[in-house]
Each structure stands twice: as C-alpha cells, then as structure tokens.
Image (cartoon, rainbow, N blue to C red; front, side):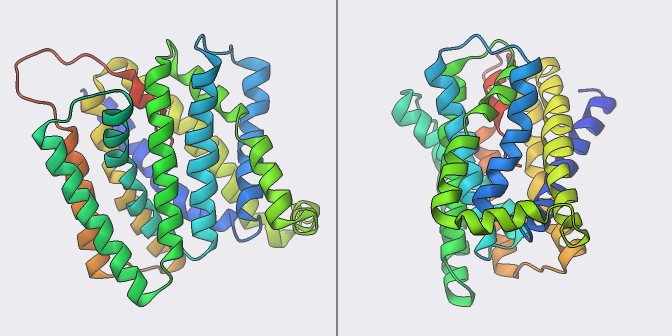
Length: 305
C-alpha cells in the first residue's frame, strides 16, 4: 500500500472520528429519529436521480438499508440523545465486528477459526466491562441502545455480503433510500409532530447553525467524501490491508470529543475499549497460509459513521 493511499486511509479515519462530535452537535437541535430521516433523505434524493440502482436482489438492498441505516443509526442516535458520550459511542460501536462474525457464522454458515473465537471473546469481555462500569457511574440504557446500533450494523454487513454488489458505492448510496420513511414514521409516533415542526421551522436560525453544520458534515464529509475514498481504496487493495485503518476511528472520536466538548473517558472504559479493538484486530487477521489475499468488497459497506 503506497504512502499516498495510507494517508488517504488515515484521512478517512479522521473524517469518521470527527463524525461523532458532529453528530452530537446535530442532536442538540434535531430529535434523534428525525435526524436519521433527514440524513438519509439528503442522500436518497441524489441517489435516485443520479446513481444507477445496484444490480442486486431487492431483498438484499432492503436488508442492507434496514440494518446499516434504520437500525444502526436509529439506535445510535437514540443512545447519544439519551446521554451516550460521543467518544464512548465510537468505542462501543466497534462491537459490530464480533457481532458480524457471529451472525455470519449462524446465517451464512461461515466457519469460525480459533483466532476469531478468541477475538470475539476478548471484545465481548471489553464490552461487558464498559456496560458494567457505566451501570455504576451513569445510565446503562445509552450503552444498550448503542450496542443495538452495532448489532444493526452487523445485520446490514451480512446482507451486504449476501448482495455481492458489483459496485459497492452504488449500494452505499441506494441503501439510503430505505431508512427515511420508517425513521420518519417512528419520529412522528415517538417524537411527535410538534417537536418535528419546531426543529424544522427553526432550522435556519442562528441557534440551529451548529446543528446544521454537524448535519452537513455527516452527509457530505463523512458519507460522500469518506466512503468515496474508502471504496476507492478497497478497489485497489485487499480489505485486510485497508480495514484495520478503521480501528483509528474511535481514537479520533475520543480525542475529537475531548477537544469539542471536554468529554473524558474513564481509564476503565479506555482499557476496555482497547480490549474491544484488540479483539477486532485479532479476529480479522488473515491466516498465514501463504495464499494470495483477494480484495473482499463486502466490507466496503460498513458505514460506522
């Protein structure tokens, strides 16, 4: 992997890490479910108008959008709105990796190596430590909601793998067509028309400007620029070379949240987060069998941000 591409991968990790405090800014004005509906609506319109629909079965397109869009971000935004710090959210969301391995094992009958089993165990222990610690010092529900988002991400990953889209970027854009309507429907039912009307009617006020900037960052920088570069890198190099750079996202997320909001993560949570990331890296390392590693574009659709 040449230095230029390594720097591009590092740039994407920084973009995705900053996305967590940007989301926290957006949630200061938009209700969480409405934020998800607006985010994906802004992506769905240009996708329908300008991007060819991926040549895959509709059920896998819906499954990918439902998991990666509706479940992942619906639960993540609810968790952050309920009090989940943005830096800690970037750590806990890494649970999607062991969830993906387990779901693929049951659903796709993919065999687990001992390395993957150990990696999953280490990650689960780390997540358990975070949950136990948060239950003592703060509310546990935000952690549970964020874990549900990670599980949704894993479900979407498996659907994306089954889809085997010839052009992953097309699937990344067209999956955005799925979440807006169910998210908006839930927003009306849970958050109410009055709250929705208040946030939309005041969206162009000075008080809402930080939230709007956060939303624009989420859509343009994190999604369009970030995934555009990420998918390009995955088209050039094996996913086993590119994917580990995503482990830098929680590092940037914690640092960016500290700079933006002064958020600090307890030493116990940092240690447990390192265990989660170590487990993910251990489980994703290729076996030393001397075979040439082919690019696996199924990992191109991991919109963790």
